[in-house]
Image (cartoon, rainbow, N blue to C red):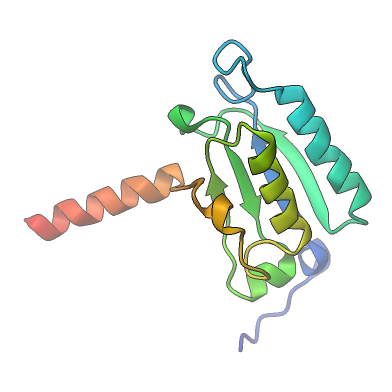
Amino acid sequence: MSSRAVVGAARTRPCTLVVCRGCCCGNPRKHPGTDHQWQLDRLRAAAAESGGRLSVRTTDCLGPCGQANVIVVQPSAEGRRNGGRATWIGWALDDDCTSDILRWATDGGPGVTAPPATLELHFIAAPGEARARGRGRNRARR
């Protein structure tokens, strides 16, 4: 058990969805079959109805453009205390994926509850995580 005290807003931080809306994510020219605005509106509506247990924010390009739309599910304070870490989700282009993300996040998200099995198929490595693994393998081969 950790002896660190959790102070301020970190004590009650909700599960947060970070929605990429950079060069490729949310771009109707690159993904014309997806209603990107509807997806964002749906995520924001769920956050508004969650009573503070879920928040949504947008950001510019997160990096893995070939796996757009990218959404990062950040754990709540409780989830982080339980060992939960940010989970990167790629190819979040359809209603089913959006539903799975919302179900998981409203149930608590990383560190609180297991994700739906179908959502795990969308998990991708964070850009820095992928580079770090690559460097480690190269060093081991020398």
